[in-house]
Structure formats: C-alpha cells, structure tokens
Length: 304
Image 1 (cartoon, rainbow, N blue to C red):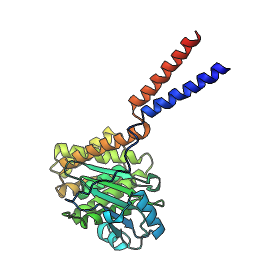
Image 2 (image 1 turned 180 degrees about the vertical axis):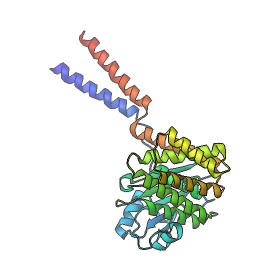
Image 3 (image 1 turned 90 degrees about the vertical axis):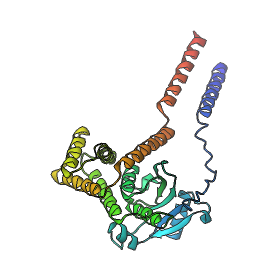
Image 4 (image 1 turned 90 degrees about the horizontal axis):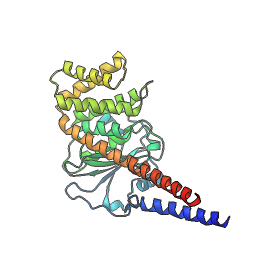
C-alpha cells in the first residue's frame, strides 16, 4: 500500500513536469506593450453605437485597451451603416473592433475575441470581405458583449480606415465586399452548407481567378462551376447566379486577385497556427502518447 502511494506520487510529479516542459511557449508575455507604428498612427478602436458605457468598458477589456491615450477611439453609427453598406439607420450595433495596421507583406489577421457572440461571420468571412474592400496587412480584433451577427464590426473597420493615416477605401469595393459577406452568411444558413465550406468556396474561387485572370463572364462561370464540383457543393440556380454576379462585379473592379491570394494564404497559416496553439499539434499529441506508452512499459518492467 505504501509503495502504491509513493508510486502514485511519483507518477503525478512526472506528469506535471512533462506538461510544464511542453507548455513554456504558451506562456507568452501578454503584458508586453506593443510599440506604436508611427507610420500608420495609433491603433483604432471602433465601438458599436448601441453599447452602454458599462458594455463599452467591457469591450475595452476584451480588446486589451489598457490605456486609451494609446489608441484612437471612434463610434460607428446608424449613418455609417447607411453610408457603407446601405443598412438600416435604426439598427442596434454592438460588435466592435480594434484595427492595428501593419507593414506591407505582414498579411491580414482576424481575431474574434468573443467567437461565442459573433453568430454569423467567421474569421475567413471577415478576411474575404476586407480583402475585397481593399484592406490588407493588418491585425483586426473583433468583440461583442452580446450575441450579434457581426456585420456592424465590418462597418466599423471601414470607418476606421477612412479616419486613419494614408488610407482611402473605394465605395464601390466596400459595397461589393458587403454583398460578399451577405451572400456568404446567407449560404451558410442553407441546408447542407456550413460556414467553413462557404469560406472555402469563396477562397478557392479567388485563388483560381488569381491563377487564370479570367477576361470574360463565361470564364468566371467556368471557374465557379469547377470549384462547386471539386468541393462537392450543390447550389440552386438562383444562388449560383448570385455567386457569378458577385465575382463578375469583382472582376469589373480590377481587384488584384494575385495579391489577395497571397494575403489569404497568409491568413490560412495564421489560423492554423492559432488552432495548433489552442489544441496542440499532432507532434505534441504524439509526444504525449509516447510518454505514457514508455511510462506503462516502465511500470510493467518494475513488476515483471
């Protein structure tokens, strides 16, 4: 009995030491203060107009705004909703965002701080829409203290860019970006489709357009049909036409899809990295498995 207690204690100590040694990298210096990039000015934090003062303080904490003098704070209003996405002026807007611009080539990173409260828009949906609107090379943190679709955060990001240094968004591109987000969220609600599948479809179409540089609507249709077949997605004739019309508008805007493709690839890498950090990569899980296998073998040898 005594040997069993000692053995259990030793086993517990080994397990603790193992996990301590393999989680050092997770203990990031989250308290380290990020240097302000003077080229682009202060990070911009935009709050939904419907937030109460208490909720706004909550959002500040969520977005890690510890010193308001080191960010520029603005509010997105019903007028902005009308201006940017032709929305309802009387809508209640809660979703908020923090935008930190980065140097060219650093990519677009979307962080949903409260994914449980953003019910319709995924990281990839935000990324696709923002790239269409002309927003690249930035870290965008999105948060809401209550459950919302997430659309007003997009409006806030547009407004933040218009009020930033050296930025000017095309109204035509933001309108098409909004159409893209609306179509993405609508398709994700349909039977047999999910958010990841919709995002994959939009991303793959854009990548193929970057490869082929289609010169006509017919070539756009061909790319879309090929991707629908490859991804085994079945759309109604109406939804297929909406998709064709959307990408035809993008083609007319002369968007640099080659650049978009690079940004999307960077985003995919960032998302995968966050997933690995959250749940552990295969190598880490395999090392756990190997550790316990070796431990069991050692125990067998002790009592054999």
